[in-house]
Image (tube, rainbow, N blue to C red; front, side):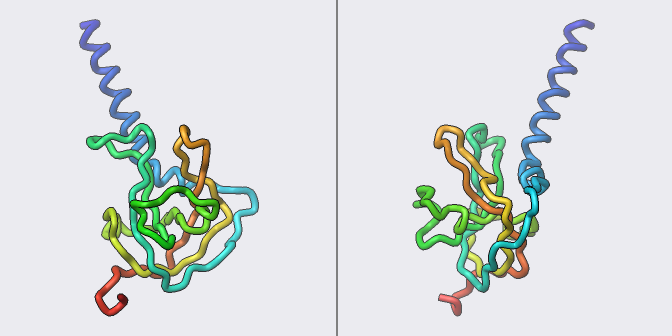
Length: 144
């Protein structure tokens, strides 16, 4: 009986931990910065959707946040340049149908002043600004 109770407790804690980690994107978007304002607009810009994995992410349990990279090169070659807050956007209203790694999109929206939302502790750096999408569509052959 004692082992059964302990097992049930451990399973409950594991499920709660996984549930909390899986909603990390929502928690990032719940982050508010003092006097949060619109700092810039992005208009019909080529972007690449990606999933930013944290250190605790595994193939079976991905942990992290969806981002839109609007830098000059592919997201796969990203090396955290000094202007990373300008080119890594953390969209709080990204539709599930766009949550696909390496999906190229044309995006418009508002960059907010709440930045430094993403980190990899071993890099001792943060980047990514909150972003409100006003329009988004997949890249088509006519766009290229």
